[in-house]
Image (cartoon, rainbow, N blue to C red; front, side, top):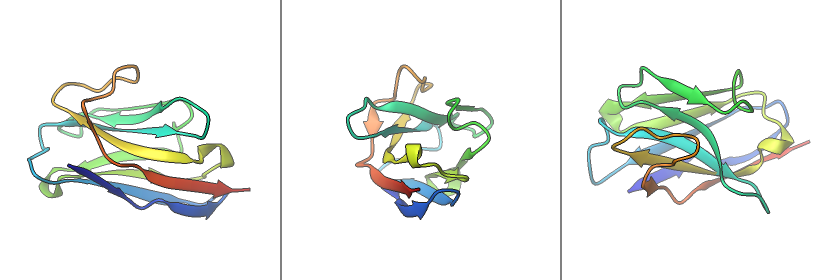
Length: 120
C-alpha cells in the first residue's frame, strides 16, 4: 500500500514536499516514481528514482524545479517541488514497481493521490 501526503494549496513561486510511504512490504528494492493528472488531461510522468536512489529521471517540466529522493530505511519517497506554477496543479500519484519505471510505462502499484493546487 502506498500512501501520499503533503499536497495542498500554494501560491505560484512557492514550494511543497510530497511524501509517499509504503506499508505492508519492503520497498527498498522497488523503483518509485511520481505521476500527475490535471483536470481533463491524461496522467503524465513527473519523476522516477531507482531502488538504490542513485539514478533519477525527470520530465522536462520538472527539471530544475523538482527533486525526487528515497529513504529506504523509512520506505518513503519524496518529491520536493520548488518554484511552483499554476500549470503544476494536478493530483499527484506515487508509483512503485520491482522493475524500472519509465515515463511511458508506469509501475504496477499506485497510491490514492494527493491534490496540489497552485494559485496565480
